[in-house]
Length: 231
Image (cartoon, helix red, strand yellow):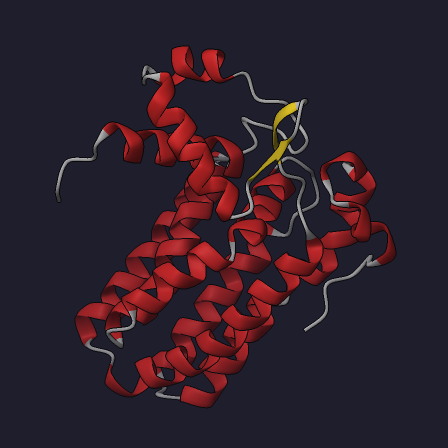
């Protein structure tokens, strides 16, 4: 893997800080504090902010400053809609060509998720969840689409990390759904596995009202008129 330059390091560092709520929605940015935090010069940070602004993670307000953008539920909904419909097809295609080694890797990820669940390490559980889904794109040689969807779903990822902060998330249900998906794959039930993936991604619908009630200040104004994310 090629070494990242400072602009790339600033971009990845700032994006991670926004996605994981180290920088809160609506928070005003102090570029010099970020310079100290990241150990990177101010120019790469400014360039990274320009890039992340295009991706919807920052807003620049004239004569006021740079702010972390609030979570936009309409953008979240559309990104998740694209992912659900694409991942349905990708999963069905993967079932037809998946290898024994790939299934072994899925089962390893299930074991890791179970371990992270028992230890309460929800950040790593979340990452294992992403690795689980990414494998279907690798199996079908659709990794470009996976990375494009990740970019399209930045608001979705922000929402999911924010949901980690609240009690009541059904972690066991997430893990059990993954187990059911693997069972359908082993049975070579392409349609069943694809339907389960869509149901799995639909879980966010149940969480929107919970997160909105807890953190209304983190959401763009239209969220008040759109309390649910629909397919």
